[in-house]
Figure: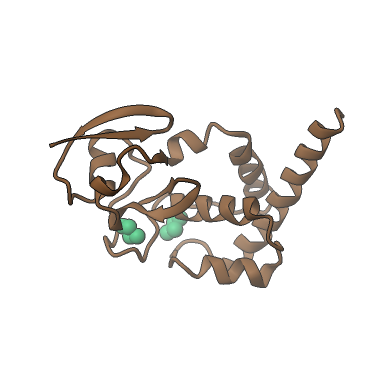
Length: 162
Ligand code: FES
Ligand code: FES
């Protein structure tokens, strides 16, 4: 069947089965930031943003997200919010290997965006959602706190025209 999706602000008519996981459909469409990992919602390798929330796309049947706004890492990497995270990761020596980087980066973005207290223990609680074998939670939490600070300064300088 043909299902109309909205991916990275562009329409896509996807030929697929209704119950097929969104991750499989996205990869077929060339969004290779979405990886095939555990297929059980545990590793984060297939993470995308749907309606502003990070979700493991391997658990989402494609028919459930018709017309929802789906953002993949390919698009997010073009944004200022990503540049804040990238700068913070670089400054703190965080190097993601690329397997579940979508899960880590979207989790970072969600934490920063939520405006919740960006303290290490709060962040580490959130990061425990997925297991990542190349990057430990503690240094990553520090990097996320720095990214939050970088973003706050950037938005502050826009607001006050500095
Ligand atoms: S492949 Fe989806 S969470 Fe692991
Ligand atoms: S980014 Fe998670 S295993 Fe490397």
